[in-house]
Length: 88
Image 1 (tube, rainbow, N blue to C red):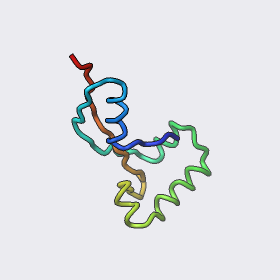
Image 2 (spheres, rainbow, N blue to C red):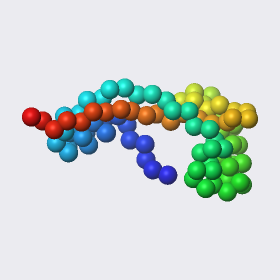
Image 3 (cartoon, helix red, strand yellow):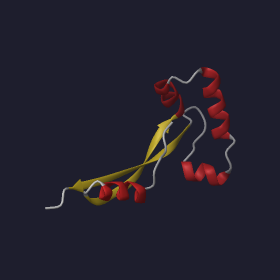
Image 4 (cartoon, rainbow, N blue to C red):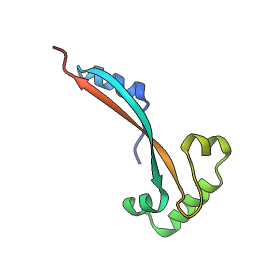
């Protein structure tokens, strides 16, 4: 697992690297729990625990993470697109 830095942090890192940073847009990428768990090699008991945690999340967390339950349970993760240019 890795941190998920905010847009402002990415912007700052790009400026610190000497780039002119331009934020283009953000979107939310839907992630299916079973497919994601298989990609990361999670053992079946852990997948069950993850499903329980997602299903039991309070409304605010469900809304913030875009959690959806059922056969295709999963969540949403934020994605941001930046363009970095070397100053002329």
